[in-house]
Length: 223
Image (cartoon, rainbow, N blue to C red; front, side, top):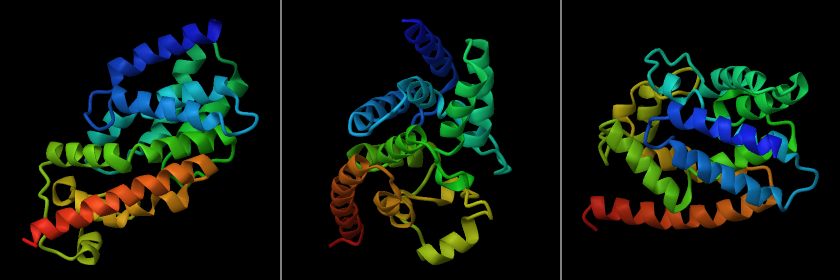
């Protein structure tokens, strides 16, 4: 009961913090629900670590989105912000450290490998929300938000050379597009997942995405 109260307090904070369309509270709750589902297939999962991590994993998304320098990594900054929130809510130092690890290691570009089962479940759940039908929807939501075109005049290799910073972040999101996102990143996600259940789900979702993007490219080429 005590932890349920804490989780509700965390949820209130997250709801007020996240404002961007593709990384809003809906995304957080989908990740939360997938975390709980995958946890049922794994042994020795501490939900008191996993649940706060899932709720707080994107707490610094707005800061990264508004950062034009490309320096802010929402996973790294988010783990620090989450640490303060958790401490204020009475979590002990050991739990705070474990939850922060989950958050700091939930994305590809941090260089922080998820070491615990809770961190791996969060990583997998977050990635699963970027593929499949919901992944397609989110990719186009972000594309519209950034003023992206469906097509690019450059090859993907030329685009990557011109528009990717050393830390792997896209320099100008308006020059990005959903097809490039799929070809460069999204279709490779199942190979990078950790848990067996996530890999199964990921393979099915990518099969659907492959059909969609092949159809989209054919239609754009008037075929």
